[in-house]
Image (cartoon, rainbow, N blue to C red; front, side):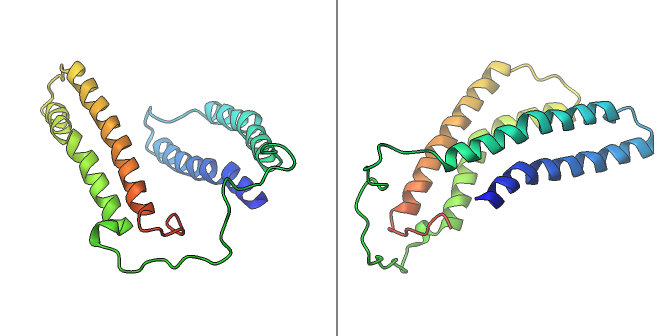
Length: 167
């Protein structure tokens, strides 16, 4: 759990910091005005060190040492069988996680494709896009489709009774 805490605390900010520093260095070499000043990057670093690191450590320690229920409560919500159930291997094509993920992504992309086409056409044609209310509706539909398809994909992953589905 210590390695997980350290990786959670360091991995994403280190990768993002390296990418931003690389792109900022390129912007400085070419002399553009779109670079991030060094003091702003320093402020972001200190903000990360002062806020994010202590909160990550505190959250990891509190989650590690949290007590669930009283002292005599059983740690599991139900009884666990000592003999593992066999995982069925003859799954249909729609139960394969790679197919499920592909179909969920296509469904989400299909719900926003036409509006995305209008936005990119207006952008490439140097015209203004005026239909922001409709864009908000399409965004709401996209959020709904993502929520529902996520629930369905998780259900289909759990349906074959594969207890190792997330690994």
